[in-house]
Image 1 (cartoon, rainbow, N blue to C red):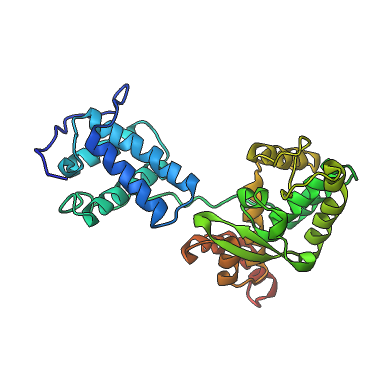
Image 2 (image 1 turned 90 degrees about the horizontal axis):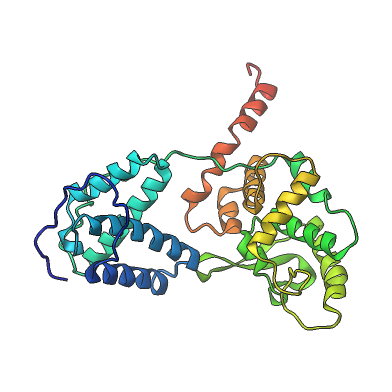
Length: 319
């Protein structure tokens, strides 16, 4: 891509309506996302998130006069940063959009489209370290006991909740389970995660029993001999949707007397937190969660601070 004259950078706020991206910016966006999909193997939802971020950033810059990526200046990028903060957006959102732009520019530099990224020497905005919410072991027990009946719905809900907590699976991974993902004797599951990566995670006895009860009981009654490889089915024999899984978790939480905000991901956080609090190896937890980097898993070491302090108070001579 040639380097044209610099575009104007006198905008101080976001435009009312962002115009369509100029051809050069649109091409850069598409080439970047294609490379992230083909070469980096990023998951579809991750690519969609990058695409949305870049649409906002590049749309705002284009409305300010930018036509080519090589013409972007530090001043323009910082003006966008100020505008987003003035809108009162969460710092995590601002930081994520900034990182998306940095990655696009780094890609453009590697491809030889620009000589150097104007953001190379600028720091990434600091993100507030938000610790994920999780349930106590007592709350998890109450949640897992909520679907006690023998109906197909109760058996399915119990199996889904048990699998989410026992494996730390993402809800998309659990809902994507098929019968060929079941290991012999149901001692483990094969999960298909982000970036088309597959991992095998152990399945505890309680989860195994709940899953068997659903597979051999309610699921068979629903199917009535009809073939299906999908494990978690709805009444119409279609795979459960993410929205259905969210409703199941929230309804069962209310039934268990849990009134805090909760989602399927809360069970994933609870799994990781309880593993770390019980002395689980951080690397093993990373593998079971399917985290690409240990740094992502390290956040759970901050969650058990009160647990460690209580142990210290209880057992240390001067606690």
